[in-house]
Image 1 (cartoon, helix red, strand yellow):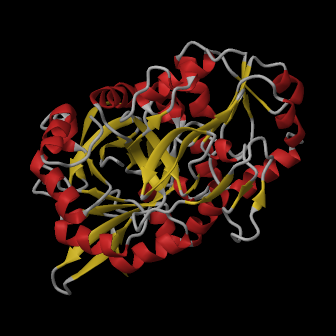
Image 2 (image 1 turned 180 degrees about the vertical axis):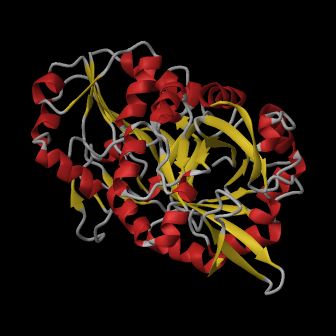
Length: 257
Length: 200
């Protein structure tokens, strides 16, 4: 039976792993390769590396660490951040990444998703969506350039519609990052993830809000996501992965022991 | 020497790194002489079948595949390329023709309404075969694919996602795995080690 995936996310800035609260006040967590190797050894099912500054600065991701990670890691990993072209993606995949994730550049030019799919196949193409619950309109809306507070802009796009567009164009997986929940550890946004799950025919990864093992159990059982991504609870040792997986198994959630 | 066939559209680096972690020093090459003089050969693959076939044709590797008498392991799309035909990117009644080293057909997975691609760690049930020495039913391996090969006489290991399909196939020196052993932790490493030790 296909296991639910536990996915630590390592936000990368200038070759270091960092993590902030609601995309601000980044603190350095440590060097990329040892952290990645530690997560793999502890039972992480996959890793995501986000260069959180890249899109806002108009740069591509610093690729020098990708092959160092690939050399060491024996689980899949995805690289995100400022991938704007086929050439950017080609280099990262050639260096050993399994998937590339696009977010802001795909919003600026949705045909990027089609071109990535045509060249590398759907299974390599992840579309990240930074989604925001707008209490005034009661809608879920997509934000762009979220690398810094100053650059963040509201696209006016509806999250459910953008998700469907991305899949139609060739996304093989959706990572839904709920910005209201990011870094505050109050739980995943189950209502929003359920709504997206209804329209998402490809694997769906929940991101933003994990604080306790119970939050993981809820998002798998109630929102039926394929994976759950989290950062601070893993980096800070609040939830050790082996304990999380043991808890999920006890809750009848299928995970790889 | 292990040679990883340079298909141009494959995730070559991660296969090379996985073999290096096992102490092997593989060569990535599209040179027919290098491929045919290797101790064993790996055909990796990600992406679409048609794109991979075009690469193999342009590099004049189709005839080389048929001459390989050493142990040959296809990985993911590389496994499907060992077969005769694939529906991927084609009409079901007019499939893409593949090299036909093994009489196998690749079709879209019948996922029973679950998300596609089939992406993540799934359990396999291996048969008694040297490639799966030390691997037991229920071991997890990493899969990423929307197309697959149904179970049949050449199935070496089974997996289920909505419906059963071949997690591995083989006959004689020719073997293929649908999962990514290079990204499947200790179990995947064991399978690659078994391949490196497979009698030539």
